[in-house]
Image (cartoon, rainbow, N blue to C red; front, side, top):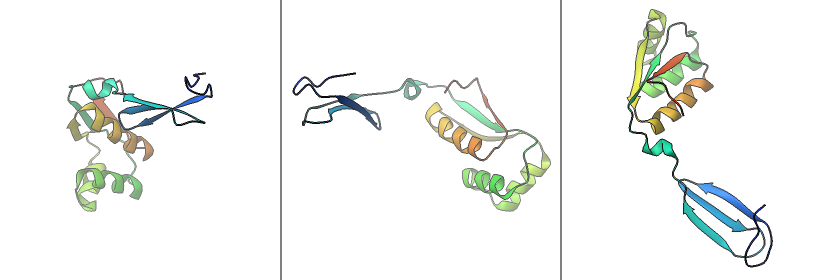
Length: 117
C-alpha cells in the first residue's frame, strides 16, 4: 500500500486517458504522470476479417453495418455468402476497440498479423 508523504494516509491510483493520477484519500496531495501504453507505439497495420459461419441475426448485422456503413441488405448478403470479408485495416488502438465490439456481438473474426492486444 502506498502512503501519502504529507499526511500518511492511503494513496489511490486512477487512470484517466493516458494519465495516471495518484492521490491521497484524505488530504489534497496528488501527482499526475503520463501512462502511455505500448499499444499506442505499435505501428503495425492489422487487418480484421469477418470469418465464415456467422449467424444471420439482427445484432450481428447491426453491429457489422454500424462498423462498415453498409446497408442492412448489403451486410446480409455478405454474411449469407459465408466468405471471409476484410472489415478493417488499421493500427492497434482502433483494432482493439473493434475487437471488443465484435466479441461482444459473438461475431467470428480473425486479426492478422497476430494481435497481442
